[in-house]
Image (cartoon, rainbow, N blue to C red):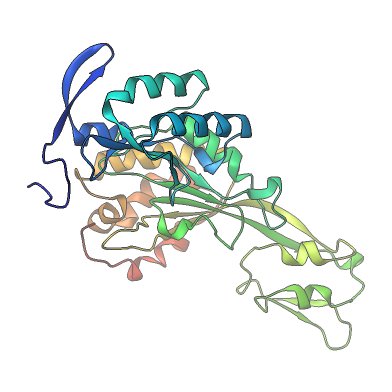
Length: 330
C-alpha cells in the first residue's frame, strides 16, 4: 500500500552500491541507515553516535557535509542520540558516505538488529554518575552493533538511579548503582546523611544522631556517601541493575528487573547471551519483551543463570513476573 501523503509513489530507487547500479527497495535502504522522506528522491542519513558522543572536529566536518549534501542544510538530533543529515538526494549517497568515511564517521542502521547504544554522561564528569556509561556504550557499539535479531534490539546505559537513559523503556537496559556501607568508627553522628537521603532510607537516632539504615528503601544512589563529611559511609560495591523487555511505540512496555549489581566485566556476556536467547526464542518481528511474555521469564532466567550467578538471585526477578502482563504487538 502506498502512503498518499508521500510525494514519491515508488518503492524503489536506482542506487549504485559497491560500483554496481541496481534498484534498491526503500526498506533495504532504511536497514542501512538511509531513511526515505516524504519528499521525492530525498532521504535522511543517520550517523552512528554511540552514547551520543562525538569529538568537536568531526562534528564540524559533518556540519560542512550537511551544508553540502542536504538540500536545506539542516541536521536532526534524534531521540536516541543519533545525528541525522536531512534532505539528501539518493544520487549523492556514495559521495556522502565516502566523505563520511574519510573523517571516520559510520552510517547507522535500522531494522532487526542490535542498534546503536544510548547512554548518559556517567561517572566521567556527572557528579551523580556511578558507572562509566560512555565506556559501556563504546563497548556495545564495537562488539554487538548490527548483530541480527528477530526485531530491533535497543540497549541503554544510565549512570545512576535518575535513569536519564530510560533503561525501563529499553529492550536491555543497565542502570548504575552503588551499595553503601556504614562504618561506625568514623561516624560523628552529624545527621547529614539522613538529611541527604531523599528516600527516607536513613533515619538519625534521636540520642546519638547516628544513622538507622533501612535497606528496603535504599535505591543505591550514593547520596549518603557523597554527603558524609567523615567518610563513615563508603562504597561497598558498584554495579548495574539489569532490565529487560521494555519498549516505546504504539504498545509501550515497561522492562523487568532481572539482576542487581552486575559488574562491568559481566556486561558483555550478559548482552551476548541475551541476544543468543532472543535469536533462539523470538519470532520474526517480535520484540524481546513479547518473547519473554510468550516463552516465560523463568526460561530466560534459567538460561542466564551462569551470567547472573552470585550477583542476584533468580527470585528477585521472579517477583516481577505477576506484573509482567501486556498485550502482544508493537
